[in-house]
Image (cartoon, rainbow, N blue to C red; front, side, top):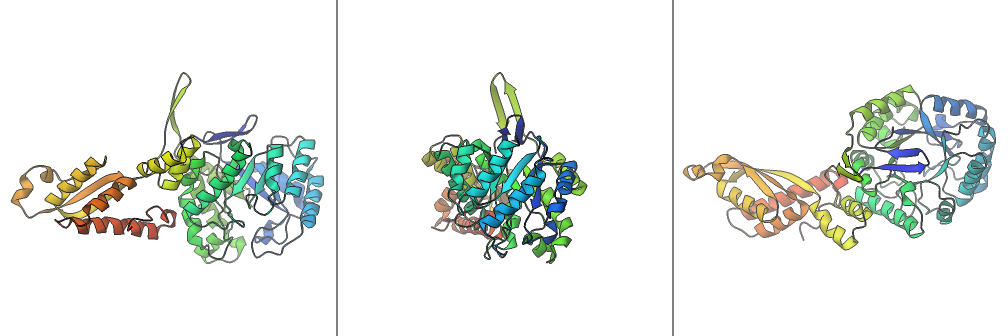
Length: 431
């Protein structure tokens, strides 16, 4: 869905033509859900060096547990922990490594950005609340013009569940930044894997991993943080986060294969590095051609109309136009079994008139079917918009076409129910 290759700093890009970046978590919070990820001050330098040795190019420092059930600490306590860590790291932090500050508070962000500026360290902010916890955060981001990781949030961190909800939340925050004059090519999107709210079951996280390509619609790098999280525990029936390493590696390989550009992890070692390298080697590469100053690229079909809508808007298409055209960008192949030849011919004719098509046995196209009582299979090819129109036309028709219309409609609804990622794609089919 469009080439992603965003330059966050001069000479430092993240995207399709760059290695998948490893963001190593330095956890300064003993309240963390993964207790063994806590890094005491006397282990900070060793942890930093080990992360870099094993391939981390971004170090994400956080002093507050973001797990909803964790004990809440004050901003002053968070500030104290960050300052202690920065004082220890200042003489050991390499210039070619990115320093990320995992915080929801403008005061902490400003402190971190000033430290980075003073020490000539490239830095970014990772705000899981997308400016909802502290509205002043957006002003700090715009003032410094630093890259920002935005996690999908409407009111409180991670409160979005379905793919459509996540897309809407990210779009709203990116639009908010754009309206303030911020260069949104510096945004990194995080769909928000994890049990942030009780209503979010692990199936939602599986849908996110399966639908990472949907978040390419913004044309910004995609960060996935999944290491040792609750959805892995739910799948493995394992409450001990120390025993979720293999599950984390499996999920990491899926995330990278499906298009993640940054993997945020507690574990930066050779196992993670090799997992990412193999998955990167397997995943599809962008297909482009160049002639003079022109570039032509092939993009994969969209699976989500809202994503298609935002993709068109990212190219400056008017919202009204994008809402019409997005229905034409989602293609479906539907196979109908045991259809009479007359019905198959009508289906083909109706889809052709709408810009779609249908394929069936050669006997249906000839006159041989008239000599038999045979039934056939039909492959329907069309967009969501074309199928909506087809269903509407066939209802109330003879030759069991009304039954076929309901069958197509119900099957599409089952797809919606079976896969959370399609939670709103076919909403309104029965209206």
